[in-house]
Image 1 (tube, rainbow, N blue to C red):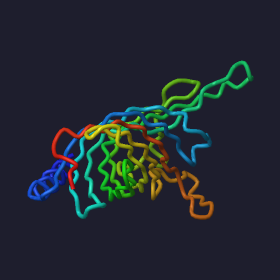
Image 2 (cartoon, helix red, strand yellow):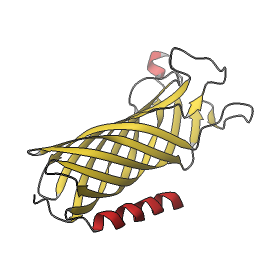
Image 3 (cartoon, helix red, strand yellow):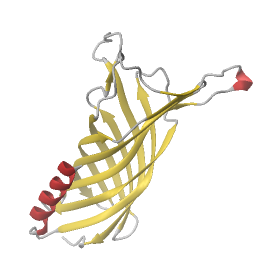
Image 4 (cartoon, helix red, strand yellow):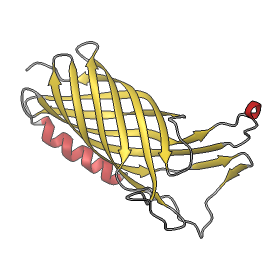
Length: 206
């Protein structure tokens, strides 16, 4: 967390001296899943919220730095009516630090970037109740690295709607068997985020 605050201070110090500096906050929801856990579908809902600072590097390009709270994980609900009593829930809240390059075209802003995330805790449950990873098994990594792509739409001068896709670059947990399928050696996060972003400092003038 200290590293995140240092990065925010460093980025803000630089961008405050820039001609086109903006800052704001975001809030929304994630729909997430995990590849490698045996369950498919973006069935795990979670909250995402954070702050961002943004500076223009040309008339059409921005560089944006963010610090977000983001809930990731996986969920599979039981369906007793289908004789399916299998239930699974994994909640994994992270502090996420994305760095995004943004391209503007009319009311749309297209973005791509990378992020570093730090695991806060986890909660694991199945149909038999809460459980924990056994010490002899591979544990969850505290760090997650991902690439992101997204698009913003200007609702007003200061309010944007953002859609974003996030995918882990390396597994946040390796298979206990040590097996590998092609390039797949473990579990990866995937999520789709829908957020509202409010810019409370700076202007959008060119």
